[in-house]
Length: 125
Image 1 (cartoon, rainbow, N blue to C red):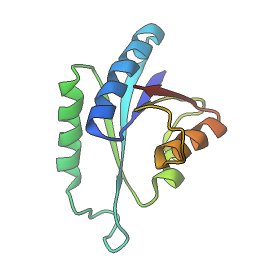
Image 2 (cartoon, helix red, strand yellow; image 1 turned 90 degrees about the vertical axis):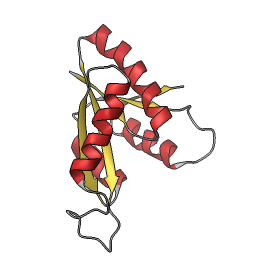
Image 3 (cartoon, rainbow, N blue to C red; image 1 turned 120 degrees about the horizontal axis):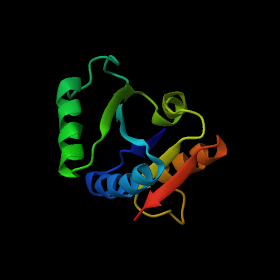
Image 4 (tube, rainbow, N blue to C red; image 1 turned 180 degrees about the horizontal axis):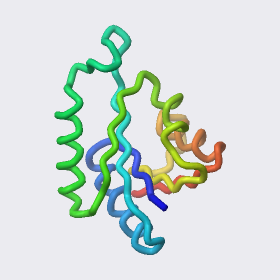
């Protein structure tokens, strides 16, 4: 079993990692930091403007900053909403940093999509 933390911003993701650590401890689960790095259409999908090894190291450092054992999983994508479902196990626990928005936002749409496909979404404020 794993608890998935979806990268949003650095401060929000650090809060989400701490929340995920509580879930992971209680459930004897692993933590996976899922990073969806958007590559703009003018660039080839395998040649982002920031190299993949640099991006992976950046997020490994972020996970180490939180002092929580975490698997970092970086994916180069065009459309995160279309890609995320294929990267999650059925009925995953997904932790998002920040608060549940009251108005339509990209993060709110993502949470709604995840809930509608059977995943449990937890906000870490």
